[in-house]
Image (tube, rainbow, N blue to C red; front, side):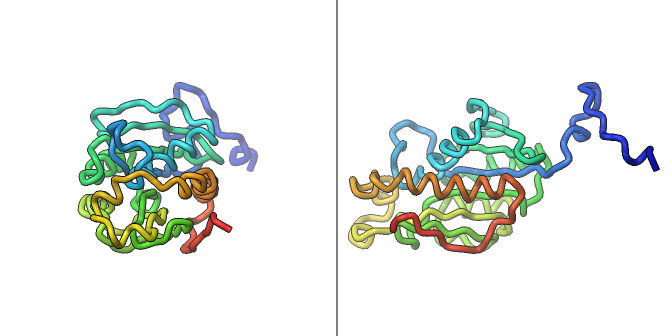
Length: 212
């Protein structure tokens, strides 16, 4: 019986797969790569993974041109957690997600996309596994390349202006001054959801409010 009680070896000579006992998880922030899109509603997915990276001490972002993304990786609770920001622009996000999934052999159910959701009011974050794109082009691109059964963390951006504005102009616009005051709370709540997932908890189907 002693043979089976020995601790696994972690020599650097061994193949990589012997070094990790957990899962490989992929968290994708959706957005557009140019600086002019920073701070827009459509780039809140990028902001969320940036905040997650800072809070959980991920290494600096590295551009991986072959995988069409900015990439970082950290080991959390025995899980290899990969975070990416596609450099394809929003409407082709699925190309980057598929490239990373194929390279690292990640099951679809271990992928989460974080993005803006026009059908949800600002102040709410909804998570779930699977579902339609609800008209979101970045999510639709992922569905076309991978299928529907990946996790979603949807950041509500709808407000009183949304119904009066052109949809494209609205999502590419900046948050209002009042909304900007709540962004730190939004980022904290999203980071909590993603951190729980990185530590091994299942992604719950739930709605969280960050404005009291």
